[in-house]
Amino acid sequence: MSKSHHPNRLNMQAFAHEGVPIAETTPLQNMERLAYEAQAPSPDSAISWKASAELRPGGQAEDDVWLHLTASALVPLTCQRCMGTVDMPLEVNQWYRFVATEAIAMAQDDDSEEDLLVMEPQFDLLAVLEDELLMALPLVPMHGECPTPPVMQVGEEALAPLARNDGDDQRPGEKPNPFAALAQLKTKND
Ligand SMILES: [Zn+2]
Image 1 (tube, protein in one colour):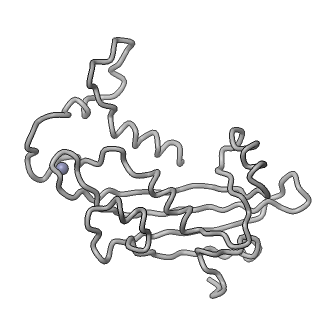
Image 2: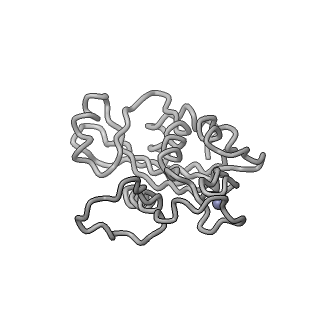
Image 3: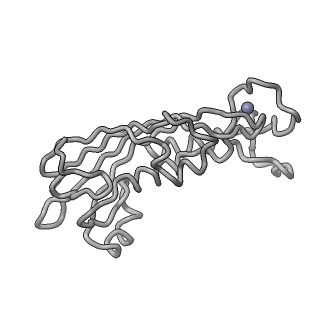
């Protein structure tokens, strides 16, 4: 990695031209919005991530800049069943294509598999990474099996198998399955 590349003010053109990936570990505490969601992050909680960029021919005279971002982290969240700490693994695996303006991004967004970002002279890679990690957070963090018995046995139906709803009226108070939501997010990011 060239010393001239700062992940929070990255020259994407230069980064893509060089084609040398950045692989770093960022302390969770440095990501304020994510740390806010965490339960007392330990000082060594960290996010391992890798960014690589490449140029691909597009419709324009200049090649398009593409960015591939992968990350994995173990973020301590509060289990909503026993209120203890659950170390939740978060994964990011996302492609982005840079476009010249917000208007182009808006116009092409629906037709694009990849996410679109607007090209800026100093691109904040860490902010985009933090956005992805926040989106990867489970809606209802829970242990698979709580280390201590929960105080109240409510919400067990949330763990029932999927696809049980075959057109019947939803029972009042039925909660969405948090793991289904997680699975959907994972599919979207693959
Ligand atoms: Zn628990």
